[in-house]
Image (cartoon, rainbow, N blue to C red; front, side, top):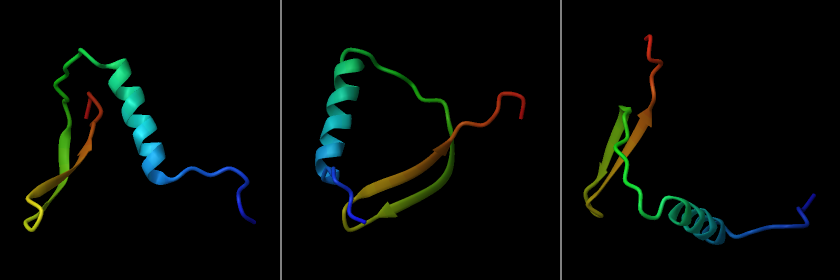
Length: 58
């Protein structure tokens, strides 16, 4: 069954980017998280991190 409404991934990404940019335009944050995985794509010189927030009591 084909969905009646669809959106391209790039359009959804643009909408999310615009919404977050508008909401947090002049704010800066430090993110407190633990790195659970890291990969590096040497050909593109890009690092990818997987982050988690651990419970405060654990």
